[in-house]
Image (cartoon, rainbow, N blue to C red):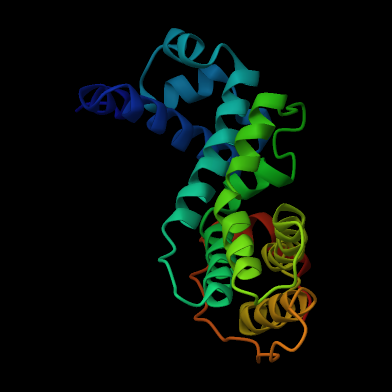
Length: 230
């Protein structure tokens, strides 16, 4: 029977990297950062530690790869949101996609935003990669400004403020403070209120849009659910 590493080898270097990162993130979720060692990962996928050291250089390089992979997945999720003739509707859809992605990938979300690997600090280059994950959001805000939906302003700064609100709501949800039966409604209401702050004068205020609840990740309650409030 082949090991995960042997199967990935047949598919190429990208598949090998994915197998390593998938196992690393699983160890991080189930056992915590102390389990994130090259030996444990190599044993889990059936490779030598040399393979991991060659690819990542060490634990710091592995943590950096997990950080970047998290933002790469977020960027792909944002880019998959279909275009819309209504720029405000598209911006709203990007917010919904952000929440859905965070709930689907809570382990990566922790690596990206909660220092799940305590000793890791992203480099300037890694932070630049992270910033690019929000290019789609910045473009959507700029489209709202160009269409006269939003008042003239700095699209990058507005995008940051909208992200801050979305991130806060999602973090509370993942931590268990916003239970599933209220989380989507609270998220939609908050996003609508934040969006109104940037509307051009005379633009009609819209009611918060309601969206289907994304599926809760199976690890979510294990990681953050102990302190749930209503």
